[in-house]
Length: 215
Length: 102
Image 1 (cartoon, one colour):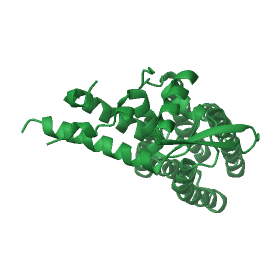
Image 2: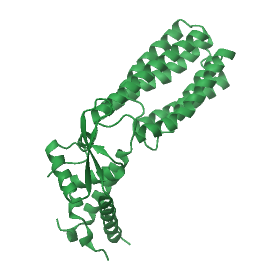
Image 3: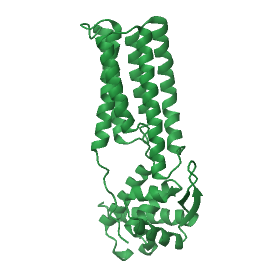
Image 4: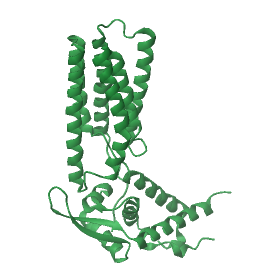
């Protein structure tokens, strides 16, 4: 096609391609879908155990630290394997940006939550703070994250806020006791269920083909 | 008035435009990474990369993968490529602006 015949629609279409590809080039998925699924299933299992056989605060803490470590290691391993498959280095600008965004809220939530359980036996409040800080950590990555992570961040933040209001206002769910069972319900409903939904949604969504190649 | 002759015919082809866009967003990209992102065949991608390299818009880098030490080919945009890409986008924007109803 001669340049002088370039219609308005073609120019618009080319600009759209440029914009979409530029956005995709800078996208970084900090949470692997497979790791999220495994972590979600593990989280649901631990939450069910906490609901049916309420453990001591120390056991509750140890169990959830175990879930965090196993899911974190699985996530790290899967992100490394993905980089290898793509032939790109593991330490990229995307990973650095993601770490800068998620480490401060995760560290804050971790320290405050552990202190609440160890020194005050406040499992419900600790779990609510973990939910909110995890949501904030994910929210910090939205400028370069895929849409699914943005939805996950919103789900954690909205659920964390609603549960905090309900717990402080009505002591919800008041039919469940002891506090460790309530905390297990909060953790299972968010860290367990939300991660499973996220993992399944990512697997079900097919990447849209943008370019039809022709030489 | 837009000078349409400024529109770069090398970049204007859709596949090459996609390659140039990715390389202008961040560099370098490995061959495998470009292939995955653009869903292009090996032959197709290499043909377009050769055209862009010949034009001086793209540079080939031979490196080794960090862990395995296997040879890897990466591509990055050159200064000339960056200027040509920016000029191409400007012309596209001018076309859209000019034909926008007032």
